[in-house]
Image (cartoon, rainbow, N blue to C red; front, side, top):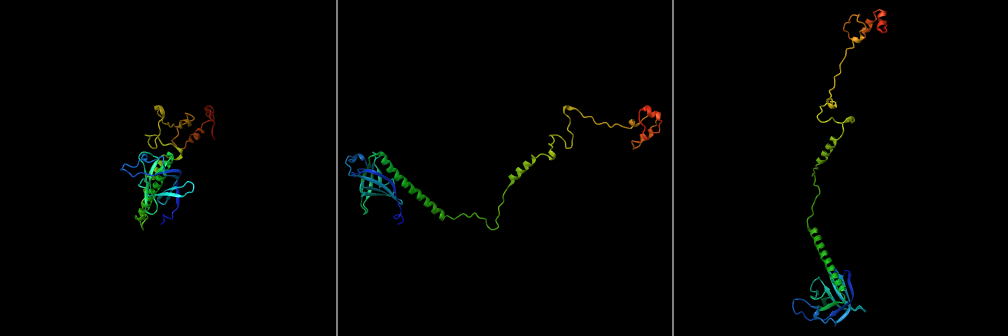
Length: 255
């Protein structure tokens, strides 16, 4: 009942078609348009293809008044309701019904090859859509009956996340950081706290600690002073000499 009350859509309209009386099929090889009287059509008029739900209808109407001449319900295509002839692409055999259970087979022909192509494509597209709708309905039915997968956490359930890759990246970044104070790291092979040797194989000369005691001895006449930790003691000894010796030596006497 839902399909009977559904919207009827228009699939194809051709203003001129021809209907032929056809002889009974002689064998299972199919119908041949050459066996028909193509120059004497039994009827000419307008053809419409409509769709209502899954069904398609081929309607033959008067081109002026629109009065229905014959109608062919089509449940599937290709099928027994519409069959192409074996010797032409412009002619078909359709199965018409009167609504009272009676049916007959008639020949249907198009004057233009493009019109027959549109007729064929309109039926193919409709039943392709019907097939897709049926497959979607089956998928939805299977999904509704199948048990749903529960992916929620149960009470007390925990998960563990491994972030080891992040730690490795941080450690690699820390190795590339420069040393504190802006100094570059020592070259390979250098000992910690060691001194880098000068280039060219030159050896550094150790610093010589000179004794400043002789420089503080102002005169050879002065007896050698006893070792003392006071460096300025020699200046006091020098002050006991005569003034002449101080002038000759060129040093100023400290008071």
